[in-house]
Amino acid sequence: MTIDKETVEKVAHLARLELNETEKQEMIKDMSKILDFMAKLNELDTSGIEPLVYMTDDANVLRDDEVKQKITHEQALQNAPKHDDDYFLVAKVIEK
Image (tube, rainbow, N blue to C red; front, top):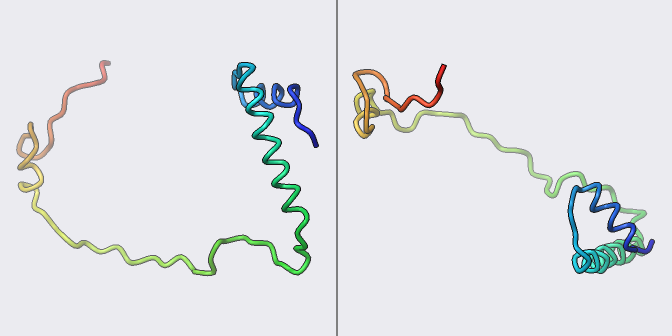
């Protein structure tokens, strides 16, 4: 498959890109390189190779959640610029 100006314009339109003439010429070169690389990959014999689903055979190892450090309510409010006895005070940002 050859890449021409019309193909680049169609792909740019589908991708909602605005390309000037210089960029279109660069895209023709880049897309041609990509297709040449894919053609080179198609030359390889992959008949005995299973499809790759994951990059590794490792299973996802998850750890149990556990509390490592506990602070008191007062300690949590200690560095807040504004607070009352129970809550952080923040500026009102939504008007009714």
